[in-house]
Image 1 (cartoon, rainbow, N blue to C red):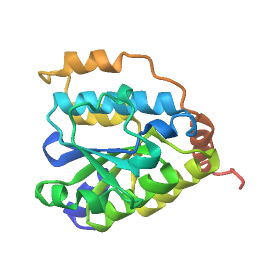
Image 2: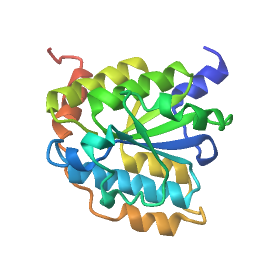
Image 3: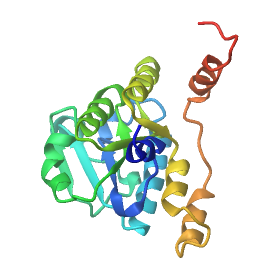
Image 4: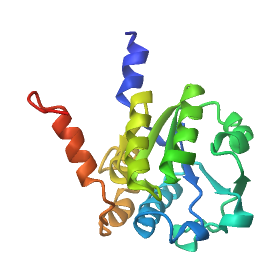
Length: 212
């Protein structure tokens, strides 16, 4: 493995070479998707920090004629919204991505995990970009689809993180000039998003005497 490949495998992220993708958090999905309010609150946290750190943000809505507009509690007012029918966010955002030659890492939040999140992640990996999925900011209508999609993405090379892990990587140092402001955001209560069982299963799979 080359030194560059070894560094890439670490999954480090920097504000100047990262972008935040917010995927399809829309009104008609509010009552269908598991943990919807919690997922949106974690994505909103990522959005606040991205704005503070000047990380670019791209927002999509899937077939808004049928699924409605982005929910207001995300806090995405003022952001340009790209409509799409493709499951992947990449085709409608292609031109925006081409404007960012320094881009290395995409931070991905939204719904649904087995649909638009998975397709977007694979398309981004295909472009040679690192993909970091905030697992506490993604969900589906089905817990099975959600959990299998997370495992599937990890098999393909996606980094699974929490929103707080990603935020702390971006800030990097308590001496950062915006740390106090971001620390207030991190002190907000973290909701249960139903992944403890999934993570416990991943932990057990690494134990020497674990059984399938």
